[in-house]
Image 1 (cartoon, one colour):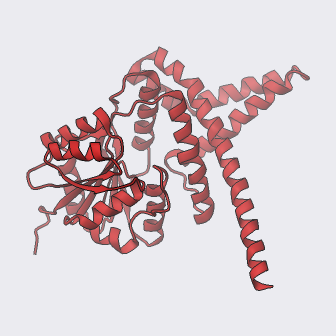
Image 2 (cartoon, rainbow, N blue to C red; image 1 turned 90 degrees about the vertical axis):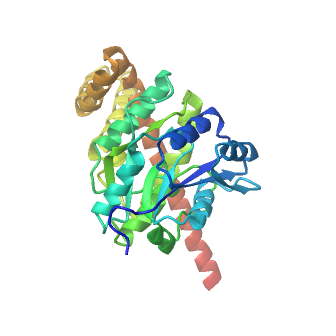
Length: 340
């Protein structure tokens, strides 16, 4: 029988158009992964990235066409031999303690099914949007509940037997989407425990631009996540779904409505002032965090982007509800047609 200190870990990473960030990721593995750590790179319809990984002497699985990260992770998980599957994205870097921390959390907590980590507070890309987005992600995870309500594929570990038993990632998600959140929902519904380990941190290297950020946030995360929430009827007061965030969405829309109404009734400006004051008060901790990390000018510059985040989150949620109602109506009509 193995002791509690020698669990085997398999790192599984899907990659598609990895580029320079992928090389940095592989370099961090070469530098910090302990000898004997199984590393599986799944080149998802990406011959070039597969060749790069082979040049780093990594084990590489190649697919002829891109099937998406869910399918790629499942392929790597099935080929892995470790007791713990450690999923990492191809645009992060690990530190000297990362893998050891994963090992310790599972050896110290034998009933734990999975754990997730966090981005660190020094993102790789230096432009404003990348710093804002990745620092906000770090802040959100560092403020989250230790008893996590979902999984995270960018830096998440799970016992391999449980992963295979529950069916792995849902391969119907063909793009980087909410396949990790969906897996987390199934884990929780099956009674498994997921832990947010805030000290397990990786550096995110991705450079965000305005278009790429909005596209990912709205179409790859918010709308499909809304569909998951409605399907599983699970709206937890945690991470991005905290009550303060939900209240902020309502306040942003109230602010917009008050500004528009001021064209006909000047008194609506007072409503707008109140909405602004409450928004600043509710979100003061995150602005304080930005100020502490990057200074007052940076913190002030994040405010319109933060409020825009609440704006498009609310819009995406509304779109998701409309689509859910439409799909449910269509499904019921189809059922009636079949039974008639």
